[in-house]
Image (tube, rainbow, N blue to C red; front, side, top):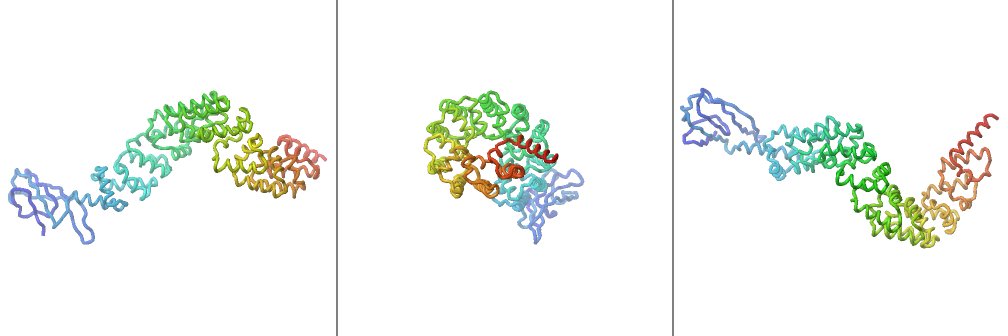
Length: 512
C-alpha cells in the first residue's frame, strides 16, 4: 500500500505513487508535474528517474482549492528523499573509485559543487584524468586532496591541450605534482606559454624535454607570459634556447630576484665573459641557488687568503662550479692552508685547483684522510710539494683503486721507492684504472718483449691508450724497424706527424 502524508489543511483521498509532488493552483485544464520516483527491487536498492503525469480537472473533486499550494509526500514505507538518493549515488560512485565514506564526506565538504555535478560529468572527468596516465590509486589521492579537479573547467582545458597538442607525452609524475599543488585557475594560459617557447625556437622534442624537467608551477603556471618572454631574451647572450634545452630548470628561477643579480655576479667575476658564464650554468645550474652574498664571500676568501684575482677565481669556478657549495670554514680554508703548508705559492695553488678541483669538495674523513695516510706510508714526505701533487692526482680515483694500483706495481717487482719515483715523474699513474694498467704492463712484457724496468725511465707509457696508440704504432713500426725501437719516441710524437710519416712510408713501399 502507498501511504500519503499531506502538508495541507485539506485531506487527500488518493494520488498516484510518488516521492514529492508539488501541485500548483488549477488555472488550466491540466497540470504537468515533474517529480522524482524511487523504485525498489530485490537485487538493487534504488535508482532515480524523472516521471511526468497529468492530473485531470476538476481538482476540487479531490478537495483542492484553486488558491492553495499543497505539498504531498508519498512514501513506500521508508522511501528516501531526493537529496538522500543523490548523496547515496555519490557515495557509491566514489566508493568504486576507492574513497571510503569518510573521505567522500570530506571531499563534498571541501567542494560542495561536486554534489550538484551530474554523474556523467564526474565520470567524464575521471576518464580524462586517466587518459593522461593518472591511475586509480593516484587519482584517489589527488581528488581527495584537490576535489576541484572534478569540477574545474580550467582542468578540462588543460587536459585537452596535453592530450591533443602534446600527444599526452608529459610525464605522469609531472602532472600529479602540478595537480596536487596548483590551483586550477593558474592553469589558464598554459597552452599560450608553451606556444611562446615554440615560437622562440624550441623544437617539438625539446619542448617535451623542457616540460618534463621543469617545475611546471614555478616555470610556467605562476609566471606571466611576459616574464617568460623576458627570461628567454635575457638568456640569449648566454646560449638562449640551447641553454634552456640543456638546463630546463633555469626557467624555475625568478628573473628579477634570482637570474639577473646572480648571473650578474658571475659576469663580473669573469670579466664580462658571456660564453664562460653560460658554460658554468651548463655544468652546474644549481650555482644559481646561491645568493650573491654567499658567492661573494667564497670569492673573497680566495682573493684575500690565496691572493687570486677575479679572472683566476672564475677559471676555478669554470672547472668546478661546486666550489660555491663547499663550506668555507670546514673545506676551503683548511685545505688551502694545507697546500700552503706543503710549500705551494699563490700561482701554484691556482694551477693545483684548476687541475684537481675535487680536492675542495671531497670528504676529509671518508676520502682525503685515507689517501694522505696511504701516500705517506709508501714514501711521500708529509707537507711537501710532491705530496701535494700526488694528492691532487689521487683525488680523481677511489681509495680502493689507489690501493690496487700500488699492489699491482709491487706484484711486478717494483718497490715503494720505485712507485714514488715514477709517480713524481708521472703523477697520473696513481689515478689510472688498475685493470687498464695491468693490460698495458702485460703487453709491454709479453708482446713487445721489453723489460718492466723501462717504466722507471718512461712511466708516461702507462698513460697512452693501449689499442689506439700503443698497439697500432708498435705493430706498424715493427714491420719496418724490427724490435729495437725507442718506446718514448714511438709514443710521444704527435698523431699528425706520425700519420704523415706513415703515409710517406706506405707510398715508398708501393713505389718499390
